[in-house]
Image 1 (cartoon, helix red, strand yellow):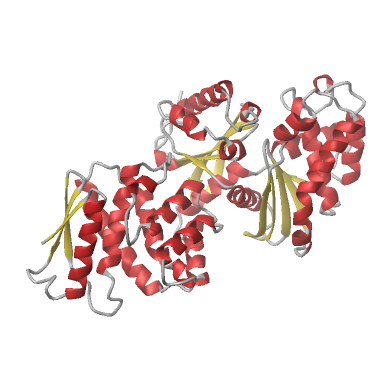
Image 2 (cartoon, rainbow, N blue to C red):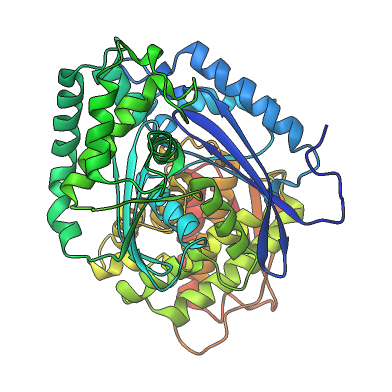
Length: 503
């Protein structure tokens, strides 16, 4: 049965494919506000399925697919643009993630984004910030199944975002695999956590915060257990965590834990989560931690809601990069405008699916295609690709960032189709389409002056045979340099197996 049957309501959904659980939240959008409608969680333990070579087991993949089938049924009436799905540590790390994504496609129609650790941290902070006092500077600690995110910021601006490869599932596998709860188990896990935290301490000491928050299941379960032990104010402190660790050692194993507020499904990973949080609070000198009920999936919802407004976080990121690398904004906007116009002409003539995402991607690539000139003019297309592949780009998932990097890499010079990345959100046909559009838009804007660019009509036959027709018979004769460069471009297209006619 569909989750929402009111066809007149504007509803959006966010799904978080975590290492421990898959979560889904649904909200109604009205007057640029969000009203939560429902939450759904299913324990999947995807992280348990990673072997020593970082391959997901068939059983873990099957657990994930079964959960996605349930979610898909509940989202039956949702448009693709109204659902955003993000995957975190385990699917970032697994070497066979693409196998999982391909197997999901027949059952789950919504695109699955693999996000970086820093992007995960930014979105978590966004979720917490929307439900807390905006004037306070804050630190957010989110302990997931495979990673821990730490973010410090003021208002809606995160200042430091870090993701560490330690989580309640991965630490359980390393230090509590036998179910034992001895002081040695806790000591070994604590030392490992402090070693991972150590390189960040000086950086975080430069930032002050008024309040610290813990988010997600680990912090929630710790808070609930502490309340059951008599600490009814809901605060988590280092002293209470120390008391809790000693109390846990009184139980023979994690299976035998009998604590008010602790669910059966949380028992196996509880000790690891307590240890990680204890190390983080000790290393960062946190006296008390508040629990926030908002985290990654709520942050995704607010990100989506932002994208319904005039400026989204990705546009702000592009503007920041333009400023940082002193990009010629006027030229970038001209290239963008022509690229969007050419893509609009191409859309009804190609078999490749063209959606709003492709318009966004080519727009950002056009704006940012010259960032590499801040390093050197020679080979700037390669420098641009490197910067856009490796810089932190809030709001962009891993594949979006890689797609933009690929587009600017092949904006000029030779085209190597064999080097195009194998992506799950974008197929090779879409990448090749955008590369051709961007190259033409840049060539036609090569003069960089106030002279109007030639008006051209784009005709495409059978996807591969392209033709540019000017608005006058002599349009190339009147632009001899352009004529020369377009003929050079024809040769490069021919080498790639493409065809470009000029009329």
